[in-house]
Length: 164
Image (cartoon, rainbow, N blue to C red; front, side):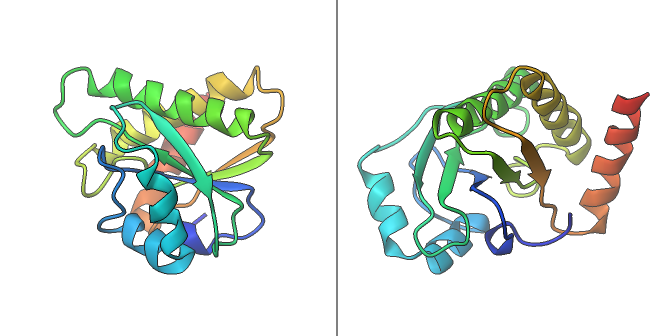
């Protein structure tokens, strides 16, 4: 789906690529702060900071989704970035299970500001979702909410490859 993750409807949760200091900064962080309200950042303060691959959950506050999963992933060219991205995704999916979420939306995790190449993002994140959903107890649907047709085309190509 193409759209902006904070506007997506009928999701129990949304995830986004958080900063290690858990400050809602640029991009999706600004949208979450603006649309979700100040209580989201206040809730993040209790966690302090997070390490790469960590995921913390807060209420969605004024957003349409009940929960926000703040996932701290690797930056481009960071050592073992693909494995760290995979682990970040799996940890986000585990957190969704922990909170008994049935439907969750992800953007193109790490693509854009954090420099993860879109092709790597699509391959790694979709692979992690496929792996996780085979054993999931609560989670029924994972949606990738992508910003534009460029992102959508890359994700669709990887979906076709996965289907064989």
